[in-house]
Length: 268
Image (cartoon, rainbow, N blue to C red; front, top):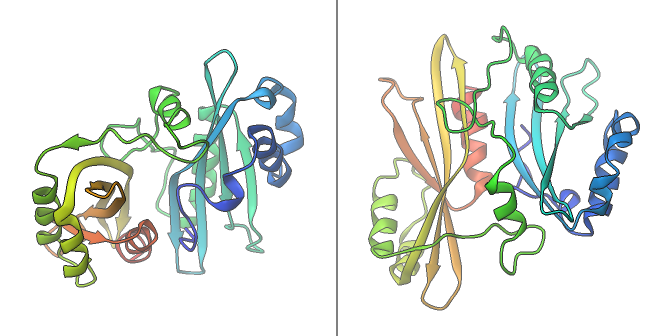
């Protein structure tokens, strides 16, 4: 994955009206004209939210990237319509290609076809969200929660903050970080003022690296501070260790965490 700027909602995939987001999604997709026919109801959507669902990156034999984005649209009848955007540069000319899918099965097959360029795959292997190694999930309350986030408009996610021991949770998280670049004392001091926190899983992946199965998970630890501000730390739990035992690394930004996961842990 090209982790530069690979936030949950990139500028081109957030902001504006839902109809405008749909139009841009279809315009940049190679199959946009073919996909547009069955999306009349989505053009009347009230809200839109986009999130990075999965990604893959390789440095050899040449640099390749694959990202899948999940677009959720809240319709006037209260239902949520989900579209998936697949972006990759695995073709011989390395030109970025984009496709949009309305069916999860079609997306899974397309991801598998793209991922064969990375090697080591024999068929679609992504598992349902909530099971080991997978991140796929059905249309559900998560989409509606994201769209109806108070004060968040189109790009915010609702925080289910839990009060109690938040400062201690932050202290333990930073203490168990094994990476040299973990947030330091300045962040630790700020988090002493944490009065509530929320933990959410962002993505979970597994890969075959040097003949060994390696898995990693990315978590966001969001903290609410006394002054009403928020601060997030990003935790990578992975098994890319000599013994295969899990280890925790903590980063100040999602980009830095994903860079570690994709470039160092998964790509080797």
